[in-house]
Image (tube, rainbow over all chains, first blue to last red; front, side, top):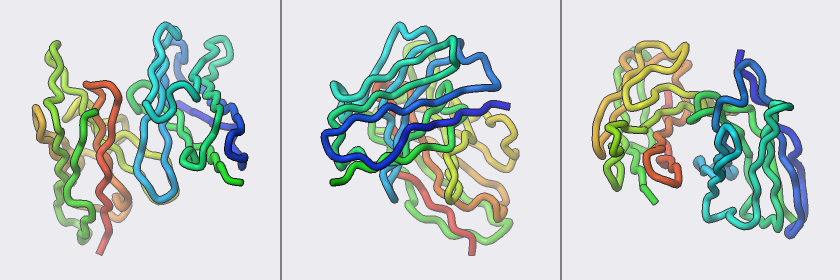
Length: 114
Length: 112
């Protein structure tokens, strides 16, 4: 059974940093591209980052480019999202997703507020 | 960026009724290799999205066959043939042909 479990969220102040993790199981993690997708409260879905299976390519939405960094450790079956210079508009549920959204984690909440 | 316009934004259906959701793209989603990366997801209340349809018309793993997808180019449709109570939630289309990956604004299905 495919499982994606996010962690690392919380309440932080504007300008702060946070690092999210997503631990994968039930599939060959090192064979799949992975995404981070977020959903602001009561809003729709926003793709924010993609990393290829071998980390050879990384892509970001304009809204997070230069502030967020996606990475992965295939030896640990873990996907990461390092978030710097957080803003109130980054407040959202953050989901990791496998492939092209084949499976999604349960999400982790990030709240940016003073 | 590719804009996906979903209609209607809200849909109210009785159990057993058949319904359709439209997703129109601002650009063709057919790539140079002949693939169309159009997907449909359902987000039930309080849950993360789950894949229903991939590549326009292919049923995701474990998805009931009352769900079907169709379309080409810029016009796509998700049909539910015989709504069941568990189908309530928000339906999203998503395209992955053009970077960045984008989602429709969602269609909320309510059960009467």
